[in-house]
Image (cartoon, rainbow, N blue to C red; front, side, top):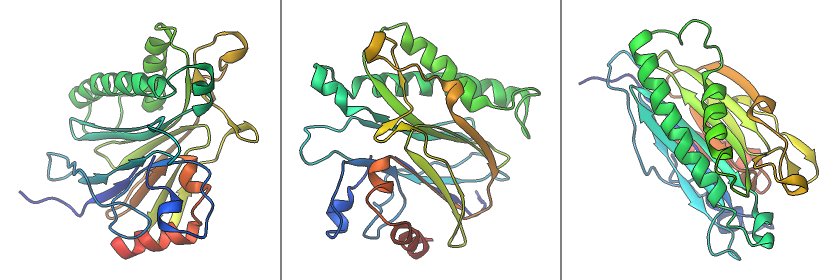
Length: 263
C-alpha cells in the first residue's frame, strides 16, 4: 500500500568518535540510533512503519559500540513498536559500578525490558481509546510509562544506575521526549536543528540517573526529575538520540552534515 514520506529516527551507544574522527580523543563509547551510511552515523539496521496509510512511517536504525578498553557496553538501545506507535531511546549504564563488582549493564537492560512491556500495555489501551490524541488527561504518557517500569525495577533491589533519554512517536506525529541525565536527543528539519534536550548534571561527570537506593551508593533521582517536551514532527524530520559519548566527541557540525547527506 501507499505510505507518506517517512519520518527518520536516529537513536542509541554507537560508533565512537575515535573510529571515525581520529583528531578527537575519545572519552567513552556511546550509543546512537542512526540512519546513515556516512562516516559518523551507521547504516539502517531496522525499519518500522505504521500500518495505517494516513499515519507517519518511521524508519529507524541503531548502532552500539563499547569503549575499546571494555569487554561489553553498559549502554542499552530501546526500540519497540506497537499499534502504529514507536518507543525509542538510550539507557546509559553508569560504568563506575563495575569497580564495586557490579555488572553495570544489568540495571539498564532490566529497565529496557520493563519499558517495552509498559509501553506495549499503554499503546494497546491508547489504540482502543483514540486515533488522534492521547486519552484525556494523559498529557505525559512517556513519563508515566517510565514511572511504572522504574517502580517494577526497584522491587528487584538491583544494584546499578542509568541515565535515560526516551522518545515516543504517536500516530498524530507528536513526539514525546523525556530526558534524565546527560544523554540527549536532537531533531533536524531541512538540515537545521529545531530541538535539543538539555543535559542534566548534578556536577562534572555526575549526571542525574535512576538507580536503586542503597544508602550512599544509590541514586535519589526519580522519573519525576526528568525534562519533558512534546514536538509535532513533519515528514522527513530526522531524530538523533545518543549517549554523551557522541555529544562529547563529535562536533555538532559534523553529525549535522552527515544527516544532511543522507536525507
